Amino acid sequence: MRDKTVEKLIKAEVRRQNETINLIASENYVSRDVLSALGSVFTNKYAEGYSRHRYYGGNKFVDELEDLAKTRALKLFHLSPKQWSVNVQAYSGSPANLAAYLALVPPGEKIMGMRLDMGGHLTHGHRVSFTGKLWHQVPYGVNKKTEKLDYGEISALAKKEKPFLIVTGYTAYSRRIDFKKFRAIAEACGAILMVDLSHIAGLVAGKAYPSPFPHADIVTMTTHKTLRGPRSALIFSRKQYSAAIDKAIFPGLQGGPHANQIGAVAVALFEAAKPQFPKYARQIVKNTKILASGLQKLGWRIVSGGTDSHLFLVDTWGRGIGGKEAGDKLESLGIIVNKNAIPYDTRSPVDPSGIRLGTAALTTRGMKEREMLRIAGLINAALLKNASAAFIQKEVVRLCRKFPIRV
Image (tube, rainbow, N blue to C red; front, side):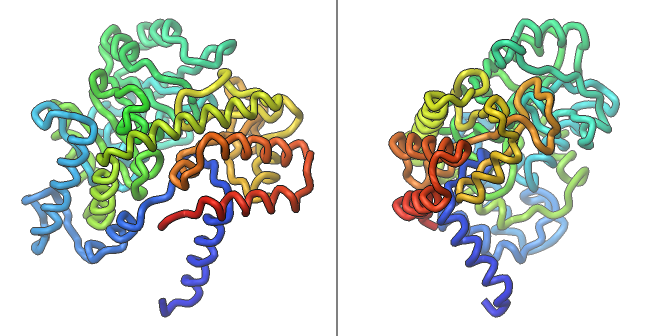
């Protein structure tokens, strides 16, 4: 690379990723093939419009690529093209959610979504998000005692408020979601049911988590978390909503799609359809359960008592450590997590009461149950200062070198 400054930063980031234990639930490591597609000559092509209906010439192979990505997406989630469509042009998760709302929900109407501080996402109607400015959020949360979804409470709220659309699927909720119950709640109040599958898309594809597709009207997802693809998004919709979704993406929100990104998504979908992917998805869940139980045995309170997915929350304030302090301390020793609010948090969002941990990236590196227990011990030692910083850093590097990132 001629630009030595950028080359230096890339090399530094490669080293950082290789020498840190990454427990960010939103991140993963893509394959060389995904990186190759993302950096391909499709970067050079402008392809405004949809297949065979472009506003520029020279899109023969872009059309084939986009159609391939659509076919693979529907096939991966076992969806009939007669009943479902998929849009592969959304740049990322937030625009995908915005497109779904713009297509289906009149401005000012009610969107029923989980509160941000309970595990929901900004784009589920939070007041600081565009979704909270264009639509009125009807917020729901988790039961204060169990820290789990209370479907009776959610049903009563939906019947009272009569939202136009209900969103389920979250960013910091570790338990299994009963999509069938959400379908019944939506039907009882006449709402559209949308599932934001961003975090658990790979688990669903790998049959390690129940599928929402038999129950949902719309399913959005990012592709860079458990699905192990590039930073992009997909919008699945039942046929009656598909034309409106497509128009909301283009010309409603975006111009030309990123053809290189679509190519990388197609590669990730190809990889997720391989026989070994379900084994990977199951191992993610196993690893997460072991890491959570390991910390629990060391005296840390796990929100809701456990996990059924790739992530969970740890109540660090229960032991007098703020989430920011915990995150900063761990990062200084080579363990990367993110600070996170816990349900009914009384502390500030900039320094909440907990941290969020996820194991998808470490599972990609080949780590299993034994390593999760070791990591639980390192986290405990780091936060309680039961071992020297030098010892912990040495152990982190040793573990990372044993399981290199293969890209």
